[in-house]
Image (spheres, rainbow, N blue to C red):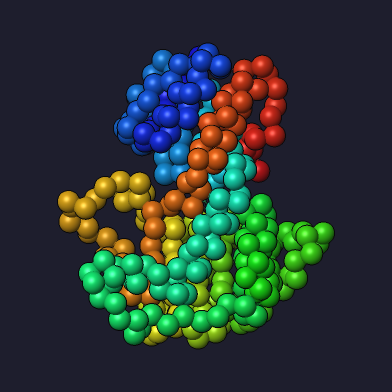
Length: 327
Ligand code: NAD
């Protein structure tokens, strides 16, 4: 069984190569992302292995299918760039629904603390021998309210780590888990009462732009917004407009609406043409990182193991839980 592995980075290779002898698969590591033009590189492979920004649209599904590809292995949890309808009856899509929710939650905590206490700015200052602290004042988080949108695996871990700060937690979920002990409120109340808002729901038709001009208007002045989920949850234009009006104490983004052209790549020698990204990076109270919340040794090892186990189960004709169906 040959796997075309798109968007390969050195850190992917380490973990997959370590496990290959045990599984007996052959992997063709490709630097390109999957799109209509690069689908041809999967010729001769039975499976493709994709990451968050690989795009599988209707045309690409057909091309892969014609080449004999039958299975898509997402080495991530999200699958918002996959046309599941087009895949139906052609390609089986499998994902890694949970590899380390803790890794993402711990990173969320790091973002909350960094943006609140302006550690990113202090770091830049002291490297330049500027030891002034004016402008770096934060707020004590103990006793403040954190609103968690999406209380699944990662959201629950975010609740756990933020509770550790002594914050009051409220949550909103389309399908609340009443056994979780989380105090659920409606979305409007979450916007109105939270001092920190953290996004942990998937990007779907319902959740797209859940943070928009209207919802931002309902938030407290001086709120902190953190997004480690998917960029499309935030209407970036509305966010920038509100940032210009000093709405937020801080905004921390590990994901960005138009990240696919930039994130995971070194663009330091290029002219950046995305005005919204340039603008976001210009705000002193915005911290942008490049989709790295998942990025721990434990996560990468788990991703490699679960991805290869998915393929093994598929080959054996089992129907693993990790199959993503079109509904
Ligand atoms: P999960 O499926 O366990 O939980 C998602 C929760 O969101 C569920 O409880 C679901 O009911 C809820 N939900 C769905 N639609 C909603 C809506 N419109 N409004 C409110 N709640 C809604 O998923 P998870 O493992 O916790 O992951 C959450 C998201 O985190 C993923 O979809 C992915 O986009 C993102 N993620 C990011 C990184 C990163 O490195 N930055 C890594 C992994 C996952």
